Length: 111
Ligand SMILES: [Zn+2]
Image (tube, rainbow, N blue to C red; front, side, top):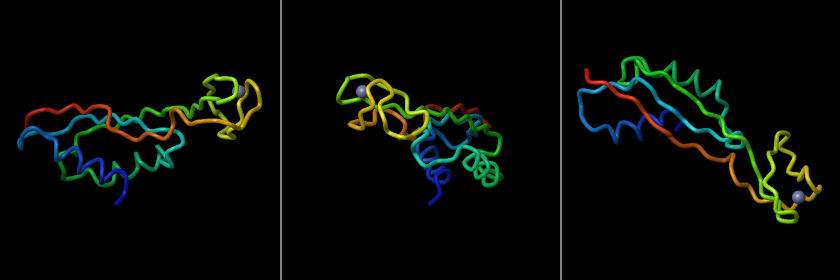
């Protein structure tokens, strides 16, 4: 199942009532989650027709890959995804953010 169809099914299961349409979906997507925002947007636009998501806009909030350095204790942003601490050069890192993929919020209206 593609990412967007799972997002749709999660939201559908949680809609409070039947006569409702979704007007906005906000997703938090980590830059290290293997999800490509453009591809996600494209998939969203191509399958929303004729569903409760037809009028919805998709907002993707990209979350930087950050790691905690286990040697110098700094939290560093991995802009190059190279897993080297820019402060001390260590490779002894733990991922803090950047792998997430979750629904932040949705907007709905009655139909
Ligand atoms: Zn370090």
